[in-house]
Length: 306
Image 1: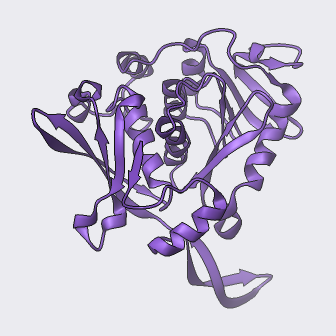
Image 2 (image 1 turned 180 degrees about the vertical axis):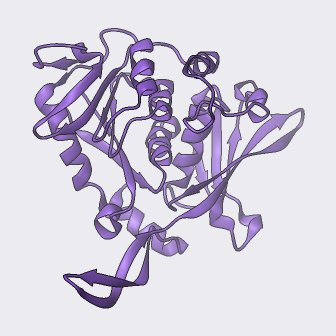
């Protein structure tokens, strides 16, 4: 795997330096009016940066290469290669995560070079061309029924998680939101950004990514595993800072995660999805407890299951 066009951002320390060098910011300074206790004043504040990212895919075609524009998403700059790879895989555009080659910024579109990412494939058989013509209707805003959405995910190649994968102590489940929160550096500055984290069987949060889009944060986490050739993620779970929706469960299932833990509530279709695909789903998680909506047998010491 090669990362070209920009340094791959792997750690918070490197991230700050690299983002400064590239001129990319995750938070922007603004002047705001503030009303407190009946008194109005102006002051400086920080807001999360939101910019478009265009994702392109290069696929071998005969003796050459064909470029396919795939999607434009609004995101917080940073971890863009992971976001592109995670999105392409979880949306079924690239069916084999091992087929990725170079991932790079597009230097030919100045001044927007850091807002266009091109991923190349080594194997054209890993590209599902029908994914570019069909509607991505597995979203909560599209209006199709839950049954059709579930069937669409199965067509994309998503299968139920195997039994016996990942067991996490209930005390560790309760601790996950706090560990995620400690790592939310951009949230500390802006208060307006989502986070997703990867955790292991010991309840340790090993990867955290932030973004203005909750699904982008999840794709960034999954992208770390795609680009490091670490899928399927059957030994990991996903913790998210907000609610758990159908889309988040779908992306987690595509990555092979047996467990999703959310700080907020699940949607009805997220619960249905978790039960159909044999996943563990916990919501309203905090130090005091959590709700289990599916797959409670993977949470040890909990004394019950859903």
